[in-house]
Length: 427
Image 1 (cartoon, rainbow, N blue to C red):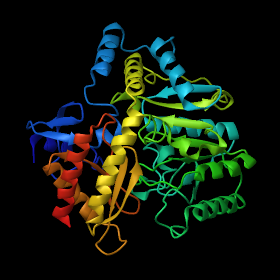
Image 2 (image 1 turned 30 degrees about the vertical axis):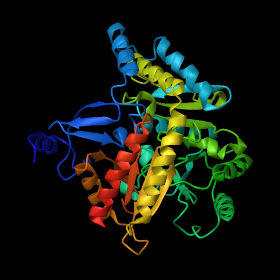
Image 3 (image 1 turned 90 degrees about the horizontal axis):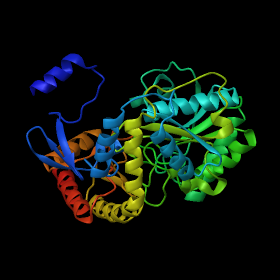
Image 4 (image 1 turned 180 degrees about the horizontal axis):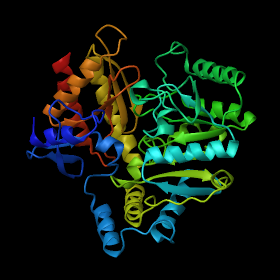
C-alpha cells in the first residue's frame, strides 16, 4: 500500500470509493492520455467520469482559465458576470427549450436538486416519478429519487418517489417485447400508476442511464410518456449530466432521441461542459424557472473562472464538430467491441451510442450479472494501459467506456485491442 493510500484511508470516509486494488494517483494528462505518479502512461477511456469531455490540458481551456484567473476568480451571482451571461445565452439557445432561463450550479447533483425544487414548487407537489435503475446524484433529495440501491444509502426522503418501467431495454418484465410493444407496455404502466396516486410534480429521467450501465429505452419512449404527462400537467426533467453536449453522436442532447413531443420542461447538465471544471446547471422555460417566491443566489455557481472554461470548451466542441467525431469514431469503436464481445462467453451485450458505450458481463452461459469479472477486467485493462469505468443495476457488472470526444481512430483501435486482451484474461 502506498503512503498516499494510507493517508487517504486515515482521513476519508469508509464509503468513499476508490478504483483498483492498488489505487491510482493521476498526476497529469494531455489529450486522451494521463500519467500516474510512477510515470506510466494510460489511454483514458473514462475521462474523470465523463467529465474531461474534449481533452486533457486542452490549450484553449487552460488559456481561458489562466487569463480569467489573472483578472478575477470570484464574485458570486450578486454581481453582474459577463462570462456567466455569455455562457447562459449559448446554453439557452442550444437547449431547444423556448423562452429558456439558465441557472448555474457547481455539480450535476446540485443541478438535479435545483430541478426538483423548481418542479415541486411549480406543481405544489412533493411526488416525483423516476426511472428504475436511475442515478441522479448524492444529495439528500437526489439519492431519494435514485432507482439504484447501490447508490441510494437511505430511505428517508423529502420526496415521495414512484418508479416507472422503461429505462432498461433488455432486462425486466417487458424485455421480451419488440420496441413498439415495449414502449406501449411502459406507457400503459405509467397510465396505470397515475390512476393510483395523487398528481406528481415531474418525471425525471436520464435519456441514457449512466451509473446504471449505459442502458436506454427505444427511441421515442419519453415522447410517448410526454403525451401522458402533458394531459396531467406533469413536468418532464431530462437529466443530461452524462448525455449532453454531443456525446451520443447522433444528437446534441439525449432528449432529442425522444423529441417528437417537444423539448423537456427542465433540462439539467454538468460534467463535460467544464472539461473538468466544476460546472452544473439547469435550463427551464421562464414560467417554471421563475416560480420560486423567495430570494436565492449562488455563491460558487457561475464563477467567472468556470464560466470562462465552459465558454472555451463549448466553442472548441462546436468549431471542431466533436459530436460528429463521437458519431464516427464511436460507431467504429462499438462495432469493434461487439466483435470482441461475440467471442466472449462473459459478454451479454455491448450497447450505447457515440462515445458512451457499455459492456455487460455475465456468468458464462447465463444472464446472471458478473461483478467479479467486471472488477477483474477493470484491473486487467489498467495493466494493459487503459482506464475504463464500471456500473450497472442489480450488480456492478457493466464496463463503462466514455473517452474524450476528440478520440482518434488509432486510439479507438488501441483501446479495443487492450479491452480484448483484458476480457480474454478473465474469461
